[in-house]
Length: 489
Image: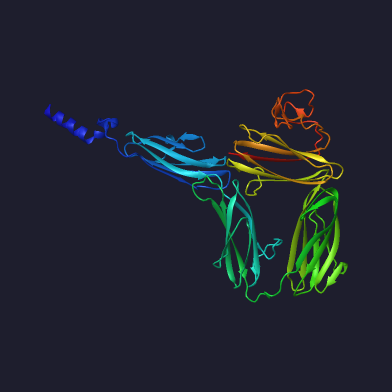
């Protein structure tokens, strides 16, 4: 009997783990958790791979849960293999997401690890260097004294804060957009880097994206004294439209006349071409010059725009030394029917809003330029807020005065309610709506907006302009419209 008791004592001493309930043991440190994302931020939508390791302090992992930060979570204990697992998650919503990994082992001790994912980073495309400020033809070869112009197509869901250009010769430039220029005085190969910084105020760290291109500046490859031809534009006339600064707004067929000036201070002009931007281009013969003084030429040219669209006029001039001068002018906005209506809708930083997402609050800026040929028009703004309650109500903007054909209107609104907005801007013939106190727009499926009082009013069956089922304009003789959509989060 005595030997049996000793054997039992030895067995419990050796196999204490199996003889004692772990819950009765004193608490200890929780499991060691490691969560490593493949990237912490990137372009929208963002796919991230999470490498996870969970090592228990005692026994085995009892619970392991990952919270992705977007309202979804997953139990991944059964996915562990040798205490490791790799998960893939796609974030299809813009935002900053706090990802948490919760783990507990058999001792009851728990641990938490966290990482942050930001589903937004600037995009940089078509980053190139040019010899001309109008970015006509990219190149990577220059001579000392040349000005190098660089440009990229940049975009970001939350807007761009600023852009940094590092020229590779110890100089840098900070800009508001993705265009800049720099003059290299010495030969050599230079790496030009563009860094675009996101304006996301909610990100826990600065968001940025970068690209690098290489340019070569060759000693003795040409004369740095020779300059490109200079080009000047001015409008002569417009028929069927109106001139507003460098822009033209009108209705097709839209006839325009321009004065084109070309000058070169150190070489003879050899060839000139004009691209009208609508698929038509033509050479400009030097003998057609309206006036010539030394190496300066002035031409009078005309063109008819026969289709709807937004066009830019580009002139290209070559001198006998091989230098190229370019100039882009416009836009020329031609519309299929009257009134011609040009609309710019941007955020407070001047970024286009269409199909983008912005934080709340966001200030919206609207610029409406309208021109009519045969009659005057009223301009209306209609806002459809899909989620929540909007503080941007349907609103009558203003009608054009009867004695003018051009109108430029600018408005600012601040939006705070989250959701998706669809904003439509209509042009309706003046006089079609004779009484501004009438209920014209559907504020919802059963009410109208009273423009005289800027408030909702009751249903009136005689108001034929409203479609009660859709809350949109009906039979309103819309002659022109523009549609923008974006989201507030």
